[in-house]
Length: 249
Image (cartoon, rainbow, N blue to C red; front, side, top):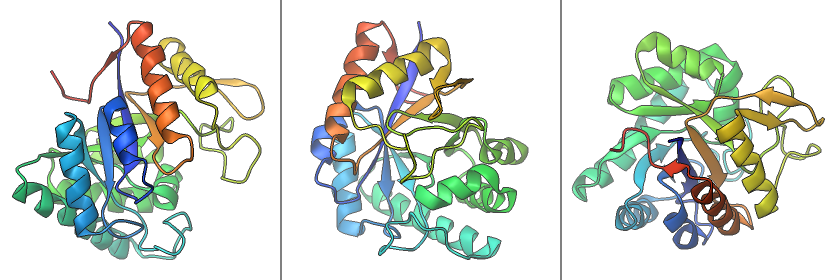
């Protein structure tokens, strides 16, 4: 039986988390840098636990004004330090609630930089490994971040996106570009089904590229996030695909 994880970026105070959480299997929780705060982290961890959803840390550039979607000039050490601090902030709250933290997924511009820049990727991987070598690392499928994780011994989970466009090199189409955002639930679900069953994704120019992903992301801050999550889950279940977080029995 085919199996896939559905993950969502949450804890970003979008207001959609309660509607999204029943439809996903992993949650990436903002850690206070690009969004969120201790109270929001606690609330989101408890929400994930109520729905049996695996909880992970979602560290980004420390840029609340830009929601972590602007690349910042930071040294490798500064990236290592902020990612470490953000993961630990979530882990400390989760530990007090007896909720395990299973994974880390970088956010926004930090994620995109790590997909192509080995120095950024290496800083993130070292932060994950030094915090807890058993943490999984969600990374763009086929990216530099996956390669760096494998070199260090962190298990990388290849990720694809339900609601974002791709260019022919396999990276995400920049926000604002043609075809960058997919907000129609039916279209998003159809794309995901092709990713999971056919291992291909349509690019913004209409061509197909191959993709191998263990997890599919839905952005929680989008206006149609809950509808997309619901429809993607429905279509996959109807097609006999098992939905489960990585490592779940």
